[in-house]
Length: 461
Image (cartoon, rainbow, N blue to C red; front, side, top):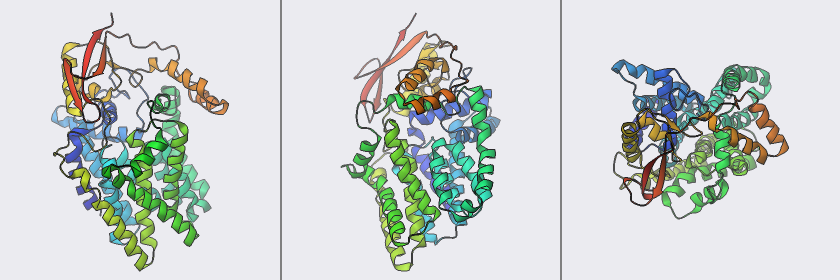
Protein backbone atom coordinates (compact mmCIF):
# COMPACT_ATOMS: atom_id res chain seq x y z
CA UNK A 1 0.00 0.00 0.00
CA UNK A 2 2.78 2.56 0.72
CA UNK A 3 4.36 2.04 -2.71
CA UNK A 4 1.01 2.31 -4.50
CA UNK A 5 0.12 5.50 -2.61
CA UNK A 6 3.52 7.01 -3.40
CA UNK A 7 3.15 6.18 -7.09
CA UNK A 8 -0.34 7.72 -7.31
CA UNK A 9 0.89 10.83 -5.51
CA UNK A 10 3.91 11.22 -7.80
CA UNK A 11 1.74 10.93 -10.91
CA UNK A 12 -0.88 13.40 -9.70
CA UNK A 13 1.89 15.82 -8.72
CA UNK A 14 3.21 15.76 -12.29
CA UNK A 15 -0.31 16.53 -13.48
CA UNK A 16 -0.91 19.43 -11.08
CA UNK A 17 2.53 20.96 -10.44
CA UNK A 18 2.13 23.82 -12.96
CA UNK A 19 -1.23 24.89 -11.54
CA UNK A 20 -0.46 25.49 -7.87
CA UNK A 21 -2.55 28.11 -6.09
CA UNK A 22 -1.15 31.38 -4.77
CA UNK A 23 -1.28 30.16 -1.17
CA UNK A 24 0.72 27.08 -2.15
CA UNK A 25 3.46 29.39 -3.38
CA UNK A 26 3.41 31.19 -0.03
CA UNK A 27 4.45 27.87 1.49
CA UNK A 28 7.16 27.45 -1.16
CA UNK A 29 8.41 30.99 -0.46
CA UNK A 30 8.84 30.12 3.20
CA UNK A 31 10.55 26.83 2.36
CA UNK A 32 13.01 28.48 -0.03
CA UNK A 33 13.93 31.24 2.42
CA UNK A 34 14.41 28.67 5.17
CA UNK A 35 16.64 26.54 2.92
CA UNK A 36 18.66 29.37 1.37
CA UNK A 37 18.77 32.08 4.04
CA UNK A 38 17.87 30.23 7.23
CA UNK A 39 14.93 32.61 7.71
CA UNK A 40 11.29 31.97 8.59
CA UNK A 41 10.03 34.51 6.09
CA UNK A 42 7.94 34.94 2.97
CA UNK A 43 10.45 37.45 1.58
CA UNK A 44 14.09 37.42 2.56
CA UNK A 45 15.12 39.74 5.36
CA UNK A 46 11.65 40.11 6.85
CA UNK A 47 10.77 37.31 9.31
CA UNK A 48 7.02 36.69 9.43
CA UNK A 49 4.51 34.33 10.99
CA UNK A 50 2.03 33.70 8.17
CA UNK A 51 2.92 30.08 7.37
CA UNK A 52 -0.07 28.06 8.56
CA UNK A 53 1.82 24.74 8.71
CA UNK A 54 5.15 24.87 10.56
CA UNK A 55 5.77 21.16 10.02
CA UNK A 56 5.11 21.33 6.28
CA UNK A 57 7.40 24.34 5.86
CA UNK A 58 10.12 22.63 7.89
CA UNK A 59 9.92 19.44 5.81
CA UNK A 60 9.91 21.38 2.53
CA UNK A 61 12.72 23.60 3.73
CA UNK A 62 14.88 20.62 4.66
CA UNK A 63 14.36 18.83 1.33
CA UNK A 64 14.83 22.11 -0.56
CA UNK A 65 18.14 22.52 1.27
CA UNK A 66 19.17 19.06 0.05
CA UNK A 67 18.35 20.03 -3.55
CA UNK A 68 20.99 22.75 -3.35
CA UNK A 69 23.60 20.11 -4.19
CA UNK A 70 22.71 20.94 -7.82
CA UNK A 71 23.90 24.52 -7.28
CA UNK A 72 20.54 26.15 -6.62
CA UNK A 73 17.42 25.51 -4.58
CA UNK A 74 14.46 23.69 -6.15
CA UNK A 75 11.39 24.05 -3.90
CA UNK A 76 8.94 22.60 -6.43
CA UNK A 77 11.08 19.48 -6.81
CA UNK A 78 11.24 19.29 -3.02
CA UNK A 79 7.46 19.54 -2.91
CA UNK A 80 7.14 16.54 -5.23
CA UNK A 81 9.52 14.52 -3.06
CA UNK A 82 7.75 15.46 0.18
CA UNK A 83 4.31 14.76 -1.30
CA UNK A 84 5.43 11.32 -2.47
CA UNK A 85 6.99 10.45 0.90
CA UNK A 86 3.99 11.71 2.87
CA UNK A 87 1.63 9.71 0.65
CA UNK A 88 3.71 6.60 1.28
CA UNK A 89 3.30 7.33 5.00
CA UNK A 90 -0.45 7.58 4.44
CA UNK A 91 -0.44 4.17 2.75
CA UNK A 92 1.68 2.72 5.56
CA UNK A 93 -0.84 4.00 8.11
CA UNK A 94 -3.61 2.11 6.36
CA UNK A 95 -1.43 -1.02 6.18
CA UNK A 96 -0.72 -0.87 9.90
CA UNK A 97 -4.42 -1.13 10.72
CA UNK A 98 -4.58 -4.52 8.91
CA UNK A 99 -7.96 -3.84 7.37
CA UNK A 100 -9.25 -5.56 4.23
CA UNK A 101 -7.12 -4.54 1.26
CA UNK A 102 -10.12 -3.21 -0.67
CA UNK A 103 -11.04 -0.84 2.15
CA UNK A 104 -7.47 0.43 2.52
CA UNK A 105 -7.07 0.89 -1.23
CA UNK A 106 -10.33 2.82 -1.46
CA UNK A 107 -9.38 4.90 1.57
CA UNK A 108 -6.19 5.92 -0.21
CA UNK A 109 -7.89 6.50 -3.57
CA UNK A 110 -10.74 8.57 -2.12
CA UNK A 111 -8.13 10.95 -0.73
CA UNK A 112 -5.27 11.04 -3.23
CA UNK A 113 -7.48 11.35 -6.32
CA UNK A 114 -9.96 13.83 -4.88
CA UNK A 115 -10.05 16.92 -7.16
CA UNK A 116 -10.52 19.17 -4.12
CA UNK A 117 -7.26 17.93 -2.59
CA UNK A 118 -5.43 18.14 -5.92
CA UNK A 119 -6.58 21.75 -6.23
CA UNK A 120 -4.72 22.55 -3.02
CA UNK A 121 -1.46 20.67 -3.67
CA UNK A 122 1.52 22.61 -2.44
CA UNK A 123 -0.25 23.35 0.79
CA UNK A 124 -0.27 20.92 3.70
CA UNK A 125 -3.23 18.86 2.45
CA UNK A 126 -1.36 15.56 1.99
CA UNK A 127 0.33 15.96 5.35
CA UNK A 128 -3.12 16.49 6.88
CA UNK A 129 -4.36 13.29 5.24
CA UNK A 130 -1.39 11.32 6.57
CA UNK A 131 -1.73 12.72 10.09
CA UNK A 132 -5.44 11.87 10.26
CA UNK A 133 -4.81 8.27 9.22
CA UNK A 134 -1.88 7.93 11.64
CA UNK A 135 -3.99 9.25 14.52
CA UNK A 136 -6.43 6.40 13.91
CA UNK A 137 -3.68 3.86 13.26
CA UNK A 138 -2.00 4.62 16.62
CA UNK A 139 -5.17 5.03 18.66
CA UNK A 140 -4.26 1.76 20.42
CA UNK A 141 -0.88 3.11 21.59
CA UNK A 142 -1.18 6.20 23.83
CA UNK A 143 2.47 7.27 23.61
CA UNK A 144 2.61 7.04 19.82
CA UNK A 145 -0.80 8.69 19.62
CA UNK A 146 0.47 11.63 21.67
CA UNK A 147 3.50 12.00 19.41
CA UNK A 148 1.36 11.93 16.27
CA UNK A 149 -1.15 14.35 17.80
CA UNK A 150 1.69 16.79 18.44
CA UNK A 151 2.84 16.49 14.83
CA UNK A 152 -0.75 16.91 13.65
CA UNK A 153 -1.11 20.20 15.52
CA UNK A 154 2.20 21.37 14.02
CA UNK A 155 0.73 20.49 10.64
CA UNK A 156 -2.31 22.68 11.31
CA UNK A 157 -3.34 23.98 14.69
CA UNK A 158 -7.00 23.24 13.99
CA UNK A 159 -6.27 19.51 13.67
CA UNK A 160 -6.48 19.48 17.46
CA UNK A 161 -10.22 18.95 16.87
CA UNK A 162 -9.50 15.57 15.27
CA UNK A 163 -6.84 14.56 17.78
CA UNK A 164 -9.19 15.28 20.68
CA UNK A 165 -12.18 13.40 19.28
CA UNK A 166 -10.17 10.40 18.07
CA UNK A 167 -8.55 10.22 21.50
CA UNK A 168 -11.93 10.32 23.22
CA UNK A 169 -13.12 7.45 21.03
CA UNK A 170 -10.09 5.30 21.89
CA UNK A 171 -10.21 3.30 25.13
CA UNK A 172 -6.39 2.99 25.45
CA UNK A 173 -5.91 6.74 25.02
CA UNK A 174 -8.67 7.49 27.54
CA UNK A 175 -7.08 5.11 30.07
CA UNK A 176 -3.63 6.64 29.64
CA UNK A 177 -4.68 10.19 28.82
CA UNK A 178 -1.94 11.79 30.92
CA UNK A 179 0.78 9.86 29.12
CA UNK A 180 -0.62 10.78 25.69
CA UNK A 181 -1.02 14.42 26.71
CA UNK A 182 2.54 14.60 27.99
CA UNK A 183 4.05 13.39 24.73
CA UNK A 184 1.72 15.66 22.79
CA UNK A 185 2.94 18.66 24.77
CA UNK A 186 6.57 17.61 24.39
CA UNK A 187 6.23 17.63 20.60
CA UNK A 188 3.95 20.62 20.04
CA UNK A 189 4.59 23.16 22.78
CA UNK A 190 8.23 24.12 21.99
CA UNK A 191 7.28 25.58 18.61
CA UNK A 192 4.29 27.54 19.90
CA UNK A 193 6.26 28.95 22.84
CA UNK A 194 9.09 29.94 20.51
CA UNK A 195 6.63 31.53 18.08
CA UNK A 196 4.89 33.42 20.91
CA UNK A 197 8.11 35.07 22.02
CA UNK A 198 10.02 35.38 18.73
CA UNK A 199 7.21 36.35 16.33
CA UNK A 200 4.89 37.86 18.91
CA UNK A 201 2.11 35.34 18.29
CA UNK A 202 1.77 31.68 19.22
CA UNK A 203 -0.60 31.05 16.30
CA UNK A 204 -0.01 32.14 12.70
CA UNK A 205 -1.06 35.71 11.91
CA UNK A 206 -3.15 34.34 9.06
CA UNK A 207 -5.93 33.75 11.62
CA UNK A 208 -6.44 37.51 11.90
CA UNK A 209 -5.91 38.18 8.19
CA UNK A 210 -8.38 35.54 7.04
CA UNK A 211 -11.05 36.35 9.62
CA UNK A 212 -11.05 40.00 8.54
CA UNK A 213 -11.60 38.90 4.94
CA UNK A 214 -14.79 37.08 5.99
CA UNK A 215 -16.83 36.05 2.92
CA UNK A 216 -15.66 38.54 0.26
CA UNK A 217 -19.19 39.97 0.31
CA UNK A 218 -20.74 36.69 -0.83
CA UNK A 219 -21.75 33.43 0.80
CA UNK A 220 -19.90 32.25 3.87
CA UNK A 221 -18.24 28.92 4.60
CA UNK A 222 -21.45 27.06 5.51
CA UNK A 223 -23.46 28.20 2.49
CA UNK A 224 -20.60 27.69 0.05
CA UNK A 225 -20.00 24.16 1.27
CA UNK A 226 -23.65 23.23 0.89
CA UNK A 227 -23.75 24.76 -2.60
CA UNK A 228 -20.69 22.78 -3.64
CA UNK A 229 -22.18 19.57 -2.23
CA UNK A 230 -25.59 19.94 -3.82
CA UNK A 231 -25.01 22.39 -6.67
CA UNK A 232 -24.93 21.87 -10.45
CA UNK A 233 -21.17 21.27 -10.81
CA UNK A 234 -20.51 17.49 -11.07
CA UNK A 235 -16.83 17.92 -10.15
CA UNK A 236 -17.78 19.62 -6.89
CA UNK A 237 -20.61 17.19 -6.17
CA UNK A 238 -18.39 14.12 -6.55
CA UNK A 239 -15.52 15.77 -4.65
CA UNK A 240 -17.78 16.20 -1.63
CA UNK A 241 -19.79 12.98 -2.04
CA UNK A 242 -17.33 10.75 -0.10
CA UNK A 243 -17.65 13.12 2.85
CA UNK A 244 -21.43 12.77 2.74
CA UNK A 245 -20.99 8.99 2.70
CA UNK A 246 -18.78 9.43 5.76
CA UNK A 247 -21.49 11.38 7.58
CA UNK A 248 -23.97 8.58 6.91
CA UNK A 249 -21.43 5.96 7.99
CA UNK A 250 -20.71 7.72 11.29
CA UNK A 251 -24.37 8.32 12.11
CA UNK A 252 -25.31 4.78 11.10
CA UNK A 253 -22.53 3.33 13.23
CA UNK A 254 -23.59 5.31 16.28
CA UNK A 255 -27.25 4.38 15.84
CA UNK A 256 -26.77 0.68 15.08
CA UNK A 257 -23.49 -0.29 16.72
CA UNK A 258 -23.68 2.13 19.65
CA UNK A 259 -20.00 1.92 20.47
CA UNK A 260 -17.07 4.23 19.91
CA UNK A 261 -14.32 3.64 17.38
CA UNK A 262 -11.36 5.83 16.33
CA UNK A 263 -12.86 6.10 12.85
CA UNK A 264 -16.03 7.44 14.46
CA UNK A 265 -13.91 10.06 16.23
CA UNK A 266 -12.31 10.96 12.91
CA UNK A 267 -15.71 11.37 11.25
CA UNK A 268 -17.09 13.38 14.15
CA UNK A 269 -14.01 15.56 13.88
CA UNK A 270 -14.88 16.30 10.27
CA UNK A 271 -18.43 17.30 11.23
CA UNK A 272 -17.28 19.47 14.16
CA UNK A 273 -14.56 21.07 12.02
CA UNK A 274 -17.12 22.07 9.40
CA UNK A 275 -19.41 23.55 12.05
CA UNK A 276 -16.59 25.46 13.76
CA UNK A 277 -15.42 26.98 10.48
CA UNK A 278 -19.01 27.94 9.71
CA UNK A 279 -19.11 29.92 12.97
CA UNK A 280 -15.70 31.65 13.12
CA UNK A 281 -16.29 33.69 9.97
CA UNK A 282 -13.50 32.77 7.56
CA UNK A 283 -13.77 33.08 3.76
CA UNK A 284 -14.82 29.93 1.87
CA UNK A 285 -11.42 29.16 0.36
CA UNK A 286 -11.62 25.73 -1.20
CA UNK A 287 -8.71 24.35 0.85
CA UNK A 288 -10.64 25.02 4.08
CA UNK A 289 -13.01 22.26 3.01
CA UNK A 290 -10.19 19.75 2.54
CA UNK A 291 -9.73 18.59 6.19
CA UNK A 292 -13.39 17.67 6.81
CA UNK A 293 -13.69 16.05 3.37
CA UNK A 294 -10.53 14.00 3.96
CA UNK A 295 -11.60 13.01 7.47
CA UNK A 296 -15.09 11.91 6.50
CA UNK A 297 -13.89 10.11 3.36
CA UNK A 298 -11.35 8.19 5.43
CA UNK A 299 -13.97 7.43 8.08
CA UNK A 300 -16.32 6.03 5.42
CA UNK A 301 -13.71 3.56 4.18
CA UNK A 302 -12.54 2.65 7.67
CA UNK A 303 -15.99 2.04 9.13
CA UNK A 304 -16.97 0.02 6.06
CA UNK A 305 -14.02 -2.27 6.80
CA UNK A 306 -15.43 -2.92 10.29
CA UNK A 307 -18.79 -4.12 8.93
CA UNK A 308 -19.81 -7.75 8.31
CA UNK A 309 -19.27 -9.04 4.78
CA UNK A 310 -22.58 -8.20 2.98
CA UNK A 311 -22.94 -4.54 4.08
CA UNK A 312 -19.18 -4.05 3.74
CA UNK A 313 -19.34 -5.00 0.07
CA UNK A 314 -22.22 -2.57 -0.48
CA UNK A 315 -20.51 0.41 1.15
CA UNK A 316 -17.15 -0.25 -0.51
CA UNK A 317 -18.83 -0.68 -3.90
CA UNK A 318 -20.45 2.71 -3.44
CA UNK A 319 -17.08 4.18 -2.45
CA UNK A 320 -15.53 2.73 -5.60
CA UNK A 321 -18.24 4.38 -7.70
CA UNK A 322 -17.45 7.69 -6.00
CA UNK A 323 -13.79 7.32 -7.00
CA UNK A 324 -14.94 6.78 -10.58
CA UNK A 325 -17.02 9.93 -10.13
CA UNK A 326 -13.79 11.94 -9.91
CA UNK A 327 -13.29 11.32 -13.65
CA UNK A 328 -14.94 14.56 -14.91
CA UNK A 329 -12.22 16.55 -13.14
CA UNK A 330 -9.57 14.85 -15.28
CA UNK A 331 -11.42 14.35 -18.58
CA UNK A 332 -10.71 16.92 -21.28
CA UNK A 333 -8.25 18.89 -19.14
CA UNK A 334 -4.81 19.41 -20.76
CA UNK A 335 -1.92 17.77 -18.92
CA UNK A 336 -0.13 19.21 -17.06
CA UNK A 337 -2.97 21.35 -15.77
CA UNK A 338 -2.93 25.09 -16.39
CA UNK A 339 -5.50 25.45 -13.61
CA UNK A 340 -6.86 22.94 -11.09
CA UNK A 341 -10.57 22.04 -10.86
CA UNK A 342 -11.07 24.47 -7.96
CA UNK A 343 -9.32 27.80 -8.51
CA UNK A 344 -9.98 31.41 -7.53
CA UNK A 345 -6.80 33.41 -8.15
CA UNK A 346 -6.65 36.48 -10.39
CA UNK A 347 -4.10 34.89 -12.73
CA UNK A 348 -2.86 31.43 -13.61
CA UNK A 349 0.38 30.29 -12.03
CA UNK A 350 2.09 30.60 -15.42
CA UNK A 351 0.92 34.19 -15.91
CA UNK A 352 1.89 35.10 -12.36
CA UNK A 353 5.33 33.60 -13.04
CA UNK A 354 5.74 35.84 -16.08
CA UNK A 355 4.63 38.94 -14.16
CA UNK A 356 6.92 38.09 -11.25
CA UNK A 357 9.95 37.67 -13.50
CA UNK A 358 9.16 40.93 -15.30
CA UNK A 359 8.74 42.68 -11.97
CA UNK A 360 12.20 41.61 -10.87
CA UNK A 361 13.62 43.31 -13.98
CA UNK A 362 11.49 46.46 -13.73
CA UNK A 363 11.92 47.22 -10.04
CA UNK A 364 15.20 45.67 -8.86
CA UNK A 365 15.91 46.30 -5.20
CA UNK A 366 12.64 48.17 -4.69
CA UNK A 367 9.76 47.52 -2.29
CA UNK A 368 6.58 46.72 -4.19
CA UNK A 369 3.12 46.61 -2.65
CA UNK A 370 1.32 43.36 -3.43
CA UNK A 371 -1.96 43.68 -5.33
CA UNK A 372 -3.89 41.35 -3.02
CA UNK A 373 -2.22 38.05 -3.92
CA UNK A 374 1.45 37.62 -3.12
CA UNK A 375 2.70 34.03 -3.10
CA UNK A 376 3.41 33.30 -6.77
CA UNK A 377 4.67 36.82 -7.48
CA UNK A 378 7.10 36.65 -4.56
CA UNK A 379 8.33 33.22 -5.64
CA UNK A 380 9.17 34.18 -9.22
CA UNK A 381 10.27 37.74 -8.50
CA UNK A 382 12.37 36.75 -5.47
CA UNK A 383 12.20 40.39 -4.43
CA UNK A 384 10.65 42.57 -1.74
CA UNK A 385 6.89 42.27 -2.30
CA UNK A 386 4.97 43.65 0.63
CA UNK A 387 1.62 43.10 2.33
CA UNK A 388 0.46 41.74 5.67
CA UNK A 389 1.65 38.24 4.78
CA UNK A 390 5.25 39.34 4.31
CA UNK A 391 5.52 42.43 6.53
CA UNK A 392 4.47 42.13 10.21
CA UNK A 393 4.77 45.92 10.46
CA UNK A 394 1.48 46.16 8.57
CA UNK A 395 -0.44 43.86 10.89
CA UNK A 396 -0.85 46.08 13.96
CA UNK A 397 -4.02 47.87 12.77
CA UNK A 398 -5.54 44.58 11.57
CA UNK A 399 -4.89 42.89 14.92
CA UNK A 400 -6.43 45.84 16.75
CA UNK A 401 -9.47 45.76 14.46
CA UNK A 402 -9.95 42.03 15.07
CA UNK A 403 -9.71 42.50 18.85
CA UNK A 404 -12.24 45.34 18.73
CA UNK A 405 -14.70 43.14 16.80
CA UNK A 406 -14.37 40.13 19.09
CA UNK A 407 -16.43 39.09 22.09
CA UNK A 408 -14.83 39.88 25.48
CA UNK A 409 -13.46 36.36 25.94
CA UNK A 410 -12.10 36.04 22.38
CA UNK A 411 -10.63 39.55 22.63
CA UNK A 412 -8.83 38.47 25.81
CA UNK A 413 -7.44 35.41 24.02
CA UNK A 414 -6.14 37.61 21.20
CA UNK A 415 -4.52 40.00 23.68
CA UNK A 416 -2.77 37.11 25.42
CA UNK A 417 -1.63 35.72 22.08
CA UNK A 418 -0.19 39.08 21.03
CA UNK A 419 1.40 39.91 24.39
CA UNK A 420 4.89 39.89 22.84
CA UNK A 421 3.96 41.42 19.47
CA UNK A 422 6.20 44.31 18.40
CA UNK A 423 3.61 47.06 18.03
CA UNK A 424 6.30 49.66 17.32
CA UNK A 425 7.62 47.96 14.19
CA UNK A 426 7.07 50.30 11.21
CA UNK A 427 5.77 48.97 7.90
CA UNK A 428 8.15 48.67 4.97
CA UNK A 429 8.08 51.88 2.94
CA UNK A 430 6.87 51.20 -0.59
CA UNK A 431 8.53 52.37 -3.78
CA UNK A 432 5.85 50.95 -6.08
CA UNK A 433 2.33 49.58 -5.82
CA UNK A 434 1.23 46.72 -8.07
CA UNK A 435 -2.49 46.87 -8.90
CA UNK A 436 -4.88 44.42 -10.54
CA UNK A 437 -7.91 45.36 -12.63
CA UNK A 438 -10.28 43.25 -14.72
CA UNK A 439 -10.21 43.48 -18.50
CA UNK A 440 -7.39 43.76 -21.04
CA UNK A 441 -4.42 45.97 -20.36
CA UNK A 442 -0.67 46.35 -20.76
CA UNK A 443 0.38 43.58 -18.31
CA UNK A 444 -2.30 41.09 -19.26
CA UNK A 445 -3.11 37.84 -17.45
CA UNK A 446 -5.85 35.22 -17.51
CA UNK A 447 -7.60 33.12 -14.89
CA UNK A 448 -10.32 30.52 -15.37
CA UNK A 449 -11.99 32.07 -12.32
CA UNK A 450 -11.72 35.77 -13.21
CA UNK A 451 -11.18 35.85 -16.97
CA UNK A 452 -8.88 38.43 -18.57
CA UNK A 453 -7.26 40.98 -16.28
CA UNK A 454 -4.14 43.09 -16.11
CA UNK A 455 -1.61 44.54 -13.68
CA UNK A 456 -0.14 48.02 -13.52
CA UNK A 457 2.91 49.19 -11.57
CA UNK A 458 2.58 52.65 -10.05
CA UNK A 459 5.31 54.62 -8.21
CA UNK A 460 4.39 55.68 -4.68
CA UNK A 461 7.09 58.31 -4.23
